Length: 477
Image (cartoon, one colour):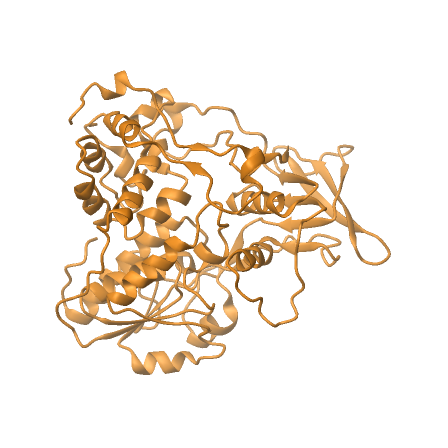
């Protein structure tokens, strides 16, 4: 390492945010990047650990070689740092923005609550690579004659398609929506990741030979048989989009919605995309009291989007107890800990209610939502008698996760086996389904998860497909 004592000399520093009062006025990214001098100091804090848990199975699913590119940044060799980073991660500008950074929780310096600012450095490397023109198409010098169809253009589908194209296969990506990206585009708000990052990756992939087919909903308006008959392999990367249904009394009231339709509508507006002509009414938080049911990332995205639309108030309900401010390092590290976390959206003014169960939703005679009846819960998440309280609400978003893949359409038409959770069944070695021509990767196989896991599974599925088609593969594990 270039600075063996760096972790002793420099304090942890992350990129800062615009003030909440300013950032809620727009949907753009609001992080304030560090300058090169500060980034060099942060990279110097990497300890050259004997066992770098940050890029092991507990830290980084794609196995980013974090100590290596930290050292390269400290040495000011940014171009080599970019090559190193891209060798394991097709889209580091995505993960550098929206990954929750399990690598930092696994960092040895996190034992002192001062982990290396890995996520900040990763984003800086990726952004510099684009700004300097180092990210270029890498088309294959030869063609294999094999054809692969990828269904879904989220992070798993994009990663798989890029890997397969780079070894010479004819790759076609089929996407239900008008543009590529999946939940990266339609689920994640622009204030967390602007969609220009997706657009330039699509252009890179098209220059590498990937063909994108939009508004192609396989199993709905395009028969799956058209693909299985024309392609040597088909990869399902359709995500886990079936929302978990809480079956709350009053769920049918006007003003009660699942989280994703709200977020998708908002992203379409911000992206100046036309709304689909299916009679779907606009969902807007302006001037309303909003209650978000759920304590995860999707719930947080609903909070931030509601504020930007002009909500009067936003309250977030979490059935879990308020976690401790800090975890017990010696019993948890290097694994992801349960501790108090406040997202940038929550910090914009949300009221948070912990250990709160939603009992029912109340409305007026016109069928319009007026309130949410809640209660405190015990350690078994059962309502405590006499603890009921009512939150006034004009709008409720249910963000309690997903039950698995949507069965109607693609999954049912394919006839592939599914597991007890409703996900398409396949192992994480060959990613092959019960149909010998069909593979599956990402959330459609593992259930809802992180973008970084989707990228890893897409890369590994691409390797499996390449090996099956060619008898050998040069794609990395």
